[in-house]
Image 1 (spheres, rainbow, N blue to C red):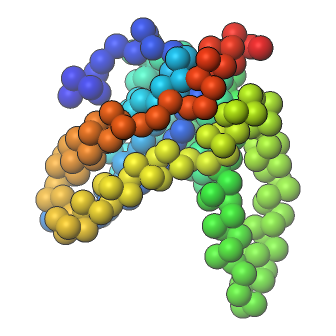
Image 2: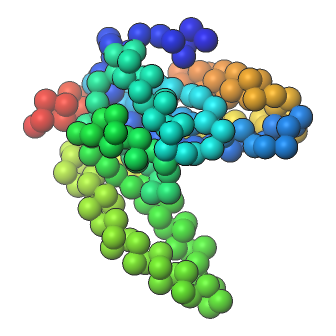
Length: 212
């Protein structure tokens, strides 16, 4: 609770990754949808910004999360990275309209590969058309320092972090409740965060914020 209500005005998150992660809840029919926001501070260190139950990855759920972060003092990030299917983008444009958008290559490629069997050729063509539709958002990372490109092309920091959460969920057959699911994810991320490496060339992050 203290984490979810803390003041954010003293930290500057220059880059953010956003994703919705689904976790089975043992005693309920609906899956828990965790909305996750991880940021890169001006000193280059990665940090969990927010973790909440979105029920679904809808724009309104993301907007609630972003509005709350803004109310607690969060500045607009320079660049946000996420899956193209997220309701996150509509929320970002409403709450932080000046933030640049970068689509996750990992999700995009997975979408295309999933559409490759012959029976799914129409779907594959559609996915390929979407790549050109999203070309500006897929190539936004090139406008930032080359040392940061490897970090900015995918939502991998969230994907890799949640591998441990999913693994724990399998062992426990899923948390017993939504509240327990959020608490479990938070504690696992909190433990993992101490091992997160700063981004490459961390000294360049402050320059990105300065508009260099």
